[in-house]
Image 1 (tube, each protein chain N blue to C red):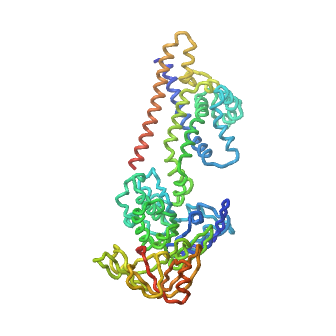
Image 2: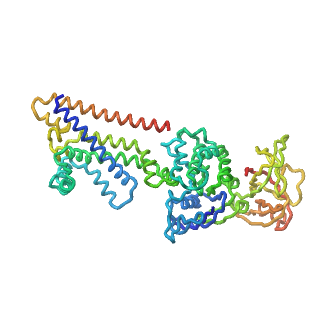
Image 3: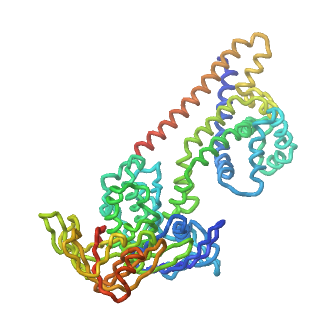
Length: 228
Length: 353
C-alpha cells in the first residue's frame, strides 16, 4: 500500500474512534432521557435524533456546513471564542461521523435501558443509593452490552460515512480524506482499480475486526457475570 | 422505635385511607390482595408519595404533606424485602449483601456486621455464588441480609414468602423469627396468610378495602381476621412428649392439648392456631369420643354470620377460642352468653413461637 493509502486508513480510524468516544456520553444521556424521561418535547427530541438516519447524507453534510462552517452561527462562535474549527478539518469529519452514527448508537442503548428492570433500581434506592449511584451501579452495568453494541454500530457507521463528510469537510488528502473518500477518488481516475480493491479489502477487514471485538467483549462481560 | 402512619391516597378507583401506630416487634399488615397492603408499605418506604398524610418514624417525619416534607427512599434508612427478592444479577451474593453498607457508613442502627448477618440467615456457603443460581428460599434469605446490612431502623417485608412453596416457607420462617427476636429491628410485614401472621406477628393491622379496620395484639385481632375462615390463637408450652403414640402434650391456660409430635424441646413455647370450623361444642363433657382435646369454657358472645351460621366466642379460663356452628345448632342447644360448654377441638395447627 502507498503512503497515501496508509494515511487514509489511519485518518479513518482516528476519526471513527474520536467520533464514537465523544458521542458516547451524549448518546447514553439522550438514550436515558428517551427511555425514562417524561418531558415536554420528548417526541421532538426523538425525531431530531433520528433525522440523520432518514435525511440524505448530503443534506446533513450541507446543514453542518451551514451551521458549523466558519461563517455559520455555531462554527463562527466556536472559532472566535475557543479557536475550535470544524470546517475542512479532520475534527469536522469526526463531527459529521458522530452525528450520522448517533441515531444508531442511541437506539441500541435506549433499548437496553428499557430492558433494565426498574424494580432493581427501586431496590437499590431503598438500600440508600441516590439516583446517580443507582444509575452508576445498577442501570449502567446492566445495559453495558447495549452500550457496547451501540458504540460498535456508531464506529462502523463512522468508518463508512461518506456523503455528509465529503459535503462538510471535502476530500483533502492527509486532513479529511477518509477511506471511503479515497476509494471514491480512486474509482474516478484511470488505473485506480487495484488500489480501490486493496482499500476495499482493508475496509472489510476493519469492519469484521470491530464486530469480532464487540462479540468478544460482550462474551467476556457475560462470563464475568456468570462467575460473579 | 415507633411508626405512625396516617395517610390518604387515591389511585384511580382505589382509595387508601389508613391510620395506625406500630409498637416494637413485628407488625403484620393482613388483608386480601387488593386491600392496599403493598401501597401502604410503599408509602412507608418512600416509593409512593401519598396524596395527603404523615409517616413518622421515631418522631421524625418522613412524609408530611401538610408541612411539605418528603424524604426520598434512599435517605429513609428503611430496609425493604420485596416479594420478588430483586437481587442484583450482575453482582455476587457477597456484593449484593454489601451493597447498602457503603451508603449506611457512619450511621447508627441495627446489626451491620457481615459475619453476624450471614450467620443469622445461614447463607455463609452462598457468598461467592451468582444470584441466578440460588433457590427461591436462598434468594429471599440473601435479600433479607442485604436489607439488614444497610442498617435500617425499620424493615419492610412485602409477602416475602408468597413466591415460595410450603417447604421453602418452612425453611425461612425460623430466620424471620430470629430476626424479630434477635436483630432488634422492628418489622412491618405484609401477608395474607393466617398461619404466617399467627406465627410471626406481635401486632396485627387488618386492611379492608384500603382502610385499617382493626389494630392490636395478635391474640385479639387474628380471630377477626377472616370472616370465612376465622380462628383463635392460643399461647401454649410443650409439657411432655408421648413417644408411644407419637404425640406432644401442650399446656395452656385453657387446658391440656394433645397434638401430633412436635419437633421442639419440652418447655418450648408454641403458638397454636385453632380454626373456628374445627371446634364443636357440647353441653356435657363428652365421653367415649375419638377427639383427644376437650376444653371447658364459658360462652362470651355469639355473632351470627352469613349463610345461617354463627361464630361463638368462648372464654376458656381467660383464653379465647372460636367455634363456627350452624344457627340451628345454636338454637337446638339453647346456647347463650354465660353458658358453660365443652369445646371439642378436632384439629390444631401449630406454629412455634
